[in-house]
View: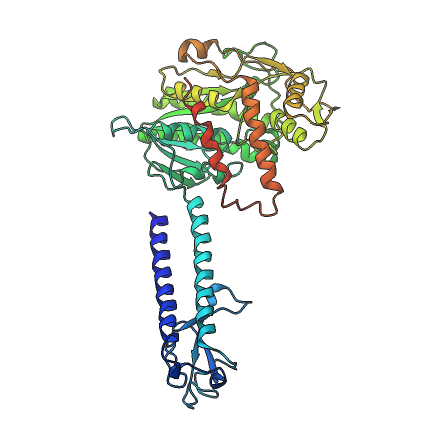
Length: 491
């Protein structure tokens, strides 16, 4: 609607300018006796604002108003050039309203040419502005399912502008629900949800969930928390607050409005496990005072709070223990294996492995995780559920996979192991299979290919000297994600 109004405004401006130019042509075609000789136009010329009179009087001849723009001034400072006769009124040199005066030989044809040039310049400038606005406000939103008021839910996603949260928001909106994103943008980015800005089912609230929030919702996905070691170690106390006080605020809101809550827990609750693979019944092996404790123990408390509210206040809760996840919209500097290896390989740097490289991880693609989260929220199962990919790889194997896919001359280098780094990590997803009919579907090769493409585009954008803008012809980079939509509906 905004773009349509702007186009109508542009057409109106063009019409006015063309009419003005046409009037100039008409006056220049008058009888030879009324042509203004260049020598006779060596008289006072006054430059005044556009609000000034739009009539010319030069030797008794009326000329069309001409918009002239000094080379050093923008088009917004276009001025009227008004030719005056030899009268010595208040608009003449020395008069009360005199601004800028000059003497120059000017013919009516040159005035007409200046008018046309200025009109074309203004039209071109307005067209460029319209192109920019068309990409800032998407022409068309992704197609969403229509749900009536009985089936449509109002769903709040804390951390909804983050890596996992933004993919979850896509899924919920495509299903036809109303989604309210709550994010303080510590690790989240507006760029991740910009393609939904202005949609009638989407709302974005800049808010830190450590502070109470009072809104009406049916479901709450509580994903707010930094999840990568560099981010959650940056401010350990804040990480603990987000997962404790923030969780209390979310559960308190759910209690007041009768909403169902899904707590996004983590495989870190298992610490450096002594049981392999890890089942939900395993209590974990965590260092309570180590560098990872601010995240590990905070998530364990978050789970405890959830089940305490369930027992005491009858709040319906779901708990997902999320294992290593990768995909588009990951932070380039989040310090995790996937992003580190891909960025280093794309930049031709050495791939850094901390420790022996024999430690294992399992990686799931983000749309598989989103599918599991939605199924868990809408199920009747309330105990913790592992969501991860049981396909296990050593760090060395994963580095080899990345190098083979990206290419280049990077080599693997080894550094000292990180304190409390888990040696083995693999989920037992039997419970998810049985209770949710869920299992990861996206193969590692396909997921890594899409993630490499995303990081390559991000590196190109960050290398651009105008990295906070975008190419008008290609559109904003977030539009590329719409190509991922088929994966969102995988069942």
